Image (tube, rainbow, N blue to C red):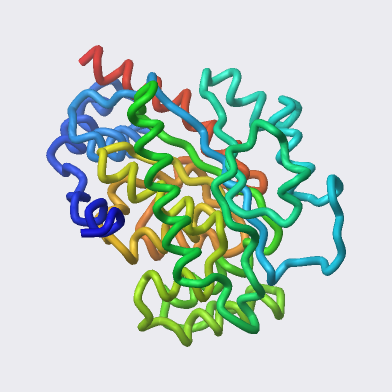
Length: 320
C-alpha cells in the first residue's frame, strides 16, 4: 500500500459525541460564540478536552503557470516579496504568530524565483506549475510527490515537538485560477459571476474534469502548494489534528483532500469567509467560518487569528 493510500485509509470520521459534549460545556459557560469552534476542535481530536498549546503555522508558497507574468522578476516577484516579509518578521502574519506563540514554517512548494526565496524556507517543491488553461498544470508524478511531501511534513510536525492544532496559509501567483478550476470540478459545473474571464475559463476547465480521479484532477488543475497542502491536510487528519484554513488557496487544497478522503472535512476549520471563490468552496465543504468576514489574502493571518480563540475553548472546557 502506498503512503497516500495508507494515510487516506486511516482517516476516520470526527467524533460527533465528543463534539456535542464540548459544545455543551461551552454553552454552560455562557459563551455561545465559541460553541462551533469547540465542536470542531473536540470532534477532530476525539476528546472532550481539546488541546491547543502545541501549534504551528505552515505557509506554502507555490506559483502557477496560469498567472506567470512572462518576465523574470527575481527578488521583486510578489511571492518572494511576501515570503521575505514573513521570514523577516514585518508581515502581519509574523506579528499575529508572535502574539499567538506559534512558530511559522515557510515552505517553498514550487516558486518561480526559488533562488530568491528566504534561506529559512523549507524547499520541498519541484518548481511552479504550467498553465492549466492550456495544458495539465502538473504531471501525475509531480502531484504525487508533492502530496507525499505534505504528508511527511505533517508527520514531522506531529513528532517533534508535537502538534495539537495546525493553521495554514499560502502564497503564489495564479492560485485563484486553480481554486476556480477545482471548485468547478467539485460542483460539476462552471462557477459563474467570477468577474474575470480567466477564472471563468479555469472554472469551465475544472467542470469538464468533474469525473476525474483525485490525482488526475490535482495534476490537471492544481498547483504545487495545492498538492503539498492537500497532503498536509490528509496527514494531519490521519493523526486527529484539526487544521485552520485561510484563503482560497487553502480552500482549493481542502477540495482536493476531501476528494481523496471525504471524512477529512471533519478535521477542517474555516477561519473566515474569504474572498473570490472561497465562500463557495466553504459552502460545498459544509464549513461555517469562525469569522463571517473575508480577511487578507490567505497567507495565514486569518487562520492564526483563531488560535487565541482555540486557547479560550480549551480553558473553558477544562474548567468544566
